[in-house]
Amino acid sequence: MRVFLKDIANETLITWELLIDDLNKTSFYNPYCKSEDYYTVFKQLILSLLIDEEIILLDADFSESELKNLTGYSDFTEFIQPIDKSKVAISGKPEDLIERLSNAPENWKITLFTSGTTGIPKKVSHDFKSITRFVKVTEQNKNSVWGFAFNPTHMAGIQVFFQALINGNAIIRLFGLPTKDIYTEIADNAITHISATPTFYRLLLPCNESFPSVARITSGGEKFNEKTFKQLNQIFPNAKITNVYASTEAGTLFASEDDVFSLRPEYEHLIQIENDELLIHRSLMGTTETNRNEWYNTGDVIEIISNHPLKFRFVNRKSEMINVGGYKVNPLEVEEAILALEGIKNVRVYSKSNSVLGSIICCEVVANSDQITESSIRTLLQSKIQEFKIPRIIRFVDELSTTRTGKLKRT
Image 1: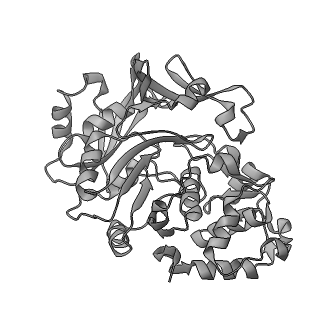
Image 2: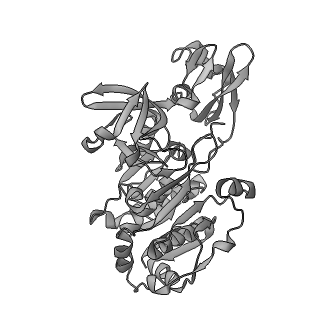
Image 3: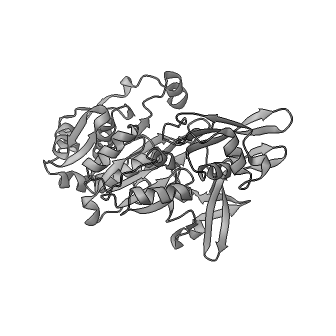
């Protein structure tokens, strides 16, 4: 049995043969795809490629008002259309399906909505070439088993999906599962590859087990701190750990084995830095409704390590800097200082309005030790960061709020 998708949350086990059978039996297509079921989303994606039609991915938990604001509609039944079955017609071999899906369709495009940690979602469209820019097809990759740790309707999840799909790999859902079930799925299915946010990986910590089957760990979407990196090395002793920079607008652009990124030669003329902000040339971008300029302002602040060759690290989002009495505070710097303390599992730093200072620093802490107190955190931070960066308000919580894609929610 060759597995296409295993999703214990939806009690789903789909083989490649069953996928092909379902595709051949499908008679109708709706370009708007909104479903909690991963298989429904994946099947709809594949169907859109086969019939060369646009697909618009919508989060399963979008409310009617959100749908109306984003698309102009809240009911998409009027968009259902019959399929020309001759465009599907797949033989029983997975390799035949994979070969057809690997050839870029002429009119196909995928439209999805930015997640971010703040703000209103923004519509972005990609063609087949841009969405599969970094898919690697090799004989070695054909034996991969992917732990799927993203929302399937967002860029990171779509890129993992295509990497697995075009290599004929099994996909094992991990996103949204309890930590215990994540451990079980990794071990039982001999997962070899996991791509996720740092927030997802911190859910696995602390962990007394190790998973030797995992050969590659990729982290993206948020800043990856050294403490988490070292802990993952212990859990996944055979894994190469890679840090990536990606966005819904551009997909994956940079990769590194630590937090310092360097430019590939072919991208040097497509990247600019202005006032410490990263700018990306529009040729690397998907299509958005708001960006028609030659250069796209990412909003990401970077620190240049060297100019020749260009090496840099990401500092923060411009929009997330906190003004405390005229001082600019990077919440990620404060989070890293707190995460470095023993007994801290996760933390979210945020601001609260203050009539005197403009804003004060606050934080929510997930601790795994009874020895951690507000007083002990403040005392330990005094030797690590400046006084004005130390949180005035510290709340202990069982878990942190996350966005639809598993990142820390900043507002």
